[in-house]
Amino acid sequence: MVEFFENSPALTTIFIFIAGIILSVISFFIKKLFMKSKNRFFIKAGGNINAGGDITVGNKNTKITNINPGIKSEKNPFIVLYVRNVKNYPKRKQKIKDDGYLITHTIKKTTNGNTYEAIESSDYFLRLRNEGEEVALNVKMESNNFIIQKYQSKQISLSDEQSVKVVKKPNNKIRSLKELEGEIFTICCDSQAGKHFCFKYKINNIENEDINFLGKTNE
Image (cartoon, rainbow, N blue to C red; front, side, top):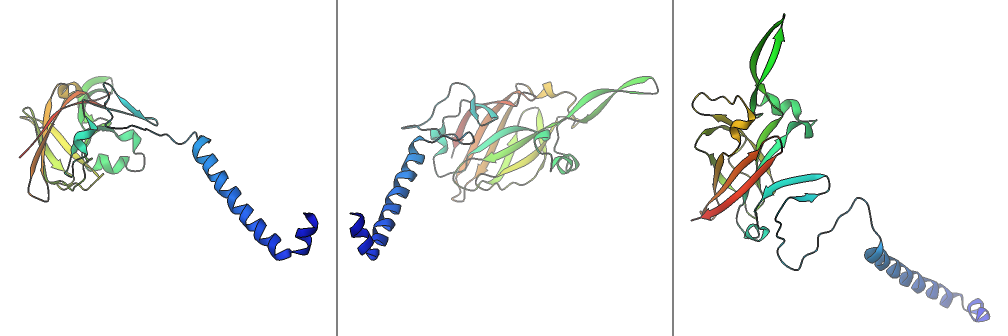
């Protein structure tokens, strides 16, 4: 066999080339099937994924309960309400604060021995994210006790987020984050085809970033 390869250099080159391809293919499938990486995760399901509690992905804990992912698979916009902590946006922290989207709260301050209360920005703000499969137009958010004073944008593209500034009626102030607990917000939008959709959420706890999805309606 050795003598054969020595006398046939062209065949030897072809054999080595083919053997290299075969080894590369085998190596690829071994890595695909058996190797694990600390930085990757996989969720495999034969149908819809339903969760009775929180869904944790990586180090982010998303406490949006009661959403069946199946209803987000339609080719329509689907707006999800999130509580965000500005500490998680170090590069944009100052801009978010300057733009006025942070929810206010009352803190005690002391000056020259005198203690008093002051309303200042907290670390939390509300964001609207489009997790559907079509752009959301004419976005509007309402509740019984709060108003949206400012929208970053009323058009939300796919997988995009926009901030909203929420204040309490009638004096446009929020003195405590607990004032938002139990509040139900309705978020409505239009699709490019002219369909109207509304989504309801209840805020359970701002500091825990805990929100409950109540349902969806469409016209």
